[in-house]
Length: 439
Ligand code: SF4
Image (cartoon, rainbow, N blue to C red):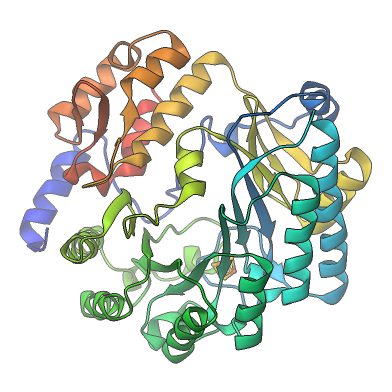
């Protein structure tokens, strides 16, 4: 939607129906109930439920949160901190212990379908430390190097030695947080790298043998203009990574940008235009839209998020990390001191969350599965058969009013197998998922 007037008209029309994109205070949907509504949990009760559980034959993913960064980005709302030697050592010990404690709770070995080291900036840790954590996982879980083993990074942390070491240790998917190739835009966000470092990191990762590289971009950054975004698209066309993730900026309370002058930010209409440019460029290069915000080359579909948006189980280790196991949806404690104390006292870092009710599971499943929508992906959206099998009710019946409304607005479409986002709906995937919260 490149035409400004058409975009403005479209946005205003949806606003009248309560579907409004906001830059400030708007959060990414990754669970239901929302985080703010999650209670403090009892680690004893959680452990009692997990004790002796048999996960044999189940798909399970693993997430490790490494909360250290080289600088603090002005928009960042994740739990992160600058690295100190003492805290890094405490973190490494607690994370290794927590991994072992999950293993002790479960009956038999847990087979991992994918692994994701996220953060923070995991690659701020040394190659040996990262290989050690992966080795710890291999000791405690069933882990094949054929599976997706992914690590997030920032260009300034990717030396040649680090990249070759990571590949040798078994990491096979690298996500590089570039955000924008324009130095002025990244400088304003207090990021610690420039365009040259980003391009060098990509080339060196290729030389090190990474055949699956993702580039993360953000649109809506202060001072970012459509012409910058167009240059980003040209750069992407030049390097052709296996996947590109473009997120809209979310400015949340507690970040430096939240209190900054709001006139510096692109308008929502411009965000919609940048998103349209992204989709058009990626489709013109024959990428598959795996999720509304992520395009991949065929055969390189991301396993970790496919499982997460499909309500598969995943274990989260590290401060603030999220887990979803056997109907329990919870976060670990943070900051670091709280996390290391929780692991020392209870064996696990779990601090906030709950066992979901049947109704909550149903809403969670539908809202997250909508993220599996994409222009040309297989099995898009919420599978009607799977929904019926899991919950014993028809999808259209469970969300009657909401689905009718969204269909009328042409934001979702239905066929015999599924309900998924339309091209118009993709930009609003979070706002549409929230409509299902009212189910
Ligand atoms: S590098 Fe990532 S985690 Fe660290 S401050 Fe920036 S956005 Fe946050």
